[in-house]
Amino acid sequence: MTKILQRNLYREVADRIGDLIEHGELSPGERISEKQLCEKFGVSRTPLREALKVLATEGLIELLPNRGARVVRLTFKKVKDTYDLMAALEGLSGELACQHITDKEIAVIRKLHNSMLDHYHQHDLKAYFELNRQIHEGILAASQNEVLQEMYSNLSQRVKRVRYSKKMTQAFWDQAVKDHENMINALEKRDSQLLGQILRDHLCNKLEVATLAGVIEDEAPDEGHSVVNA
Amino acid sequence: MTKILQRNLYREVADRIGDLIEHGELSPGERISEKQLCEKFGVSRTPLREALKVLATEGLIELLPNRGARVVRLTFKKVKDTYDLMAALEGLSGELACQHITDKEIAVIRKLHNSMLDHYHQHDLKAYFELNRQIHEGILAASQNEVLQEMYSNLSQRVKRVRYSKKMTQAFWDQAVKDHENMINALEKRDSQLLGQILRDHLCNKLEVATLAGVIEDEAPDEGHSVVNA
DNA sequence: AAAAGTAATTATGAATTCAATATTAACGAG
DNA sequence: CTCGTTAATATTGAATTCATAATTACTTTT
Image (cartoon, rainbow over all chains, first blue to last red; front, side, top):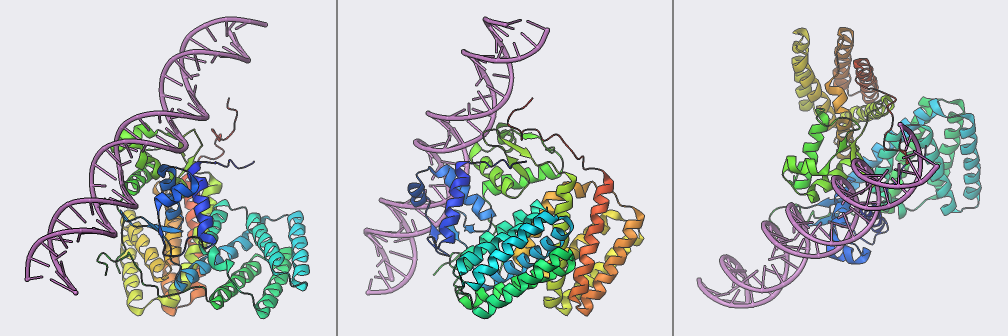
């Protein structure tokens, strides 16, 4: 049951532009020059433009008719809305996971959890985050709902650049670890309601972190949206 | 604050292909001929192919590399998964709506509700459905979460062809109306938890209807997915 | 000198052309 | 007659070319 993974040029280009946005090499609100990117990637405009259309559909960029493409500006509200949604989806994934997960899968997640705790005690933030990601991904996978996974993945993409530059306070970290303890317990008891609730609250906290990081410059002058420009 | 609505050729074509799929003029699993559609719409392959990429991203069709596009086959599981997701999103929209909705907006929905009841008593299914749609859309709009609305709209698109051919039993209809009564009450009390719960359960019932309609032929031979074909 | 209007340039939108892959048809061997 | 191989055809993938709209630079006028 291995997924067919299509490796079209347009998909490749879309992913690489996505990386550029994620890592800040294309700034929010920045105009995207087709010619420039064509030269950078060594492709013609056809697959590049296809990639832009796809990225616009995925919500990473916006297309101004006859005026090119821009990287979407992440306002605080947009990020907040996205996190609210992701929290709801994580909640659902928890509920579904409780219904479908096998003992073996729980054991795997328990192992990841223990490993994560080690990194927590060693204050290894990077390794902690990687394990954290794997745990949440594991629950998402256990939900057995591919549409859900697809949607979550898309939303995650959109706010990745905020996540990357987030700062972690010790207090938050402590709370996050506690949440994870409760998560595992709920999962082992297969208490779907409880796990759903924990996951919802857990992600809400993440938003606070993103906010504190102050990387979101709000109230940006929405250039290019008005017909008559100054 | 009116949205800029881009009217590119590719978007136009994508919408029209979406309509063809929705109304069954392009069957599930059916191979999509680029040339044929180009002639039908009177456009060249460039915007058409862009449209196909967008539709694939939106989950309506799937692209087989070097082998063209196919309309996505809706299995029972896929529809079930989508409905589960939509239920979660509707639940969230209810919770958020309770936080943001104004008395005036509630009054509008109440009016729609009463109008819907009239059609219910007159057994006017078509009019009932239209009002029903408007009510749910009103709550969704009151959530003030654009990302949520965008996601819901996309999911709705995917299963529209099933919805269209659904049959309505009297028992289900009675229950649906009762749900709506409770919804309005919860909304007026601004009981976000309750409204969220009602909306989740309400949509779950819809799934049963879709199932009963028997329009979903499951266990289809997944042609085109295996490398070696018979 | 500032503003408005016009020409030149550049970038985007879409059609066409060229190349590569897959499908079909024809052929021949077992 | 069936299976496998190869040639012909058709379709998709991507680059190029042409057309159109937007931006910039340059006049011209007040």
